[in-house]
Length: 453
Image (tube, rainbow, N blue to C red; front, side, top):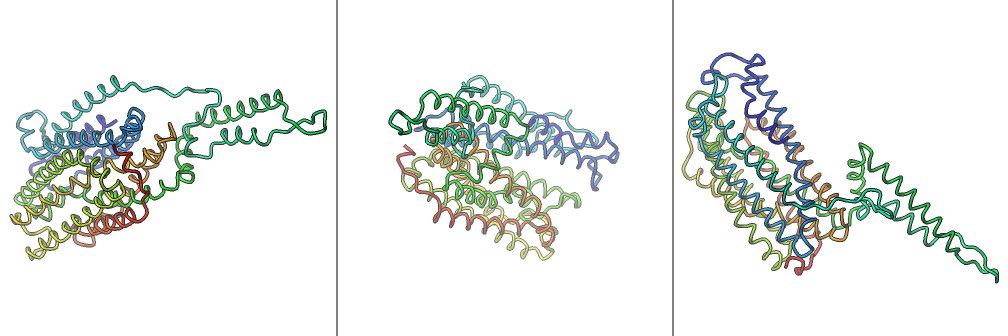
């Protein structure tokens, strides 16, 4: 799905051209290509769905393959490999030469920037295919046994499983038969028969329920009420954490192009040039961010042993708060420096450019924590739940996608109130990070440092 999505996105301009968009050359046309935009949005939705879908199984498989003493190390290593992928991806985005290396990718509807995107995506598809094949071949997964006697459902460790309750109840509430003295004793034969009947009935009920098309969604939503108490706090902190990250993820390179370099993708040739330069500089900043992310991933486990995962996660949110506040301040200074406003000054002030790259780089450290510590805490809190770790991580993913929808739907109208700038989104991110840090400090559970050895 990811491969199909990025190909749709990369070739959206050409598809829109075929479907009836303007025939004017892309180097001269400055309007909106509606059909291409529609195709792009479809591809982006598909890509977002596929990315979110792959996270749950990847994290759950990681928890299954790693032993109790390896979960936190495994999440740190997982994070370091994500950093390697980010470095390769943002290196591809920072390069403006793809269209010269693969000139056949450009067309009348797809100029240099579009050709760069196509080439980078096609290379990414090759890497993705290789990595997926390696995972499928080497990850020796033990499948769950279906219709096993006394089988507990995947959600049983987290839910009040009906079968488990039925069996437990049968042991304590079984009818008793009178003995020769008039006292009632439990008939072993009758007890075993009733127990088998209840177990079989519960098994059939669970089996038919788990095979239903809406079973997964029902289990996921129902589990919100039956998670371990500490997991509710983890979900709250996770939601606040990602509410602070998504404005950065959605607007980072656009912010660099508009508010640091003062370009405009729909402006004249000079404005478009500066905007593209800012976007590439933003990709370079994300490359530096990924380098710090990779290095920091090896520091997380010692830090968790030293001060505990609760404080490590809280510190990361406070760092995000400071960086997002700094980003908003940089935007305000940049606006004041150019009397024409955010989108009308041309060029980048060197000091503002350096400060922006520093912020991008520093954010790599809290990002490493965000990619590993919450999942390690979840695995620790649900360590005795067996297959329920997958369900818990699925619920944790809800705390990621809901903030994403909030930011995606709300950031555009908020930014429009400020003339198209990204300041409101970054202010929201700063406040969310501060709230997340406070809640993490006061409410997250204290996990033993021994669990991080």
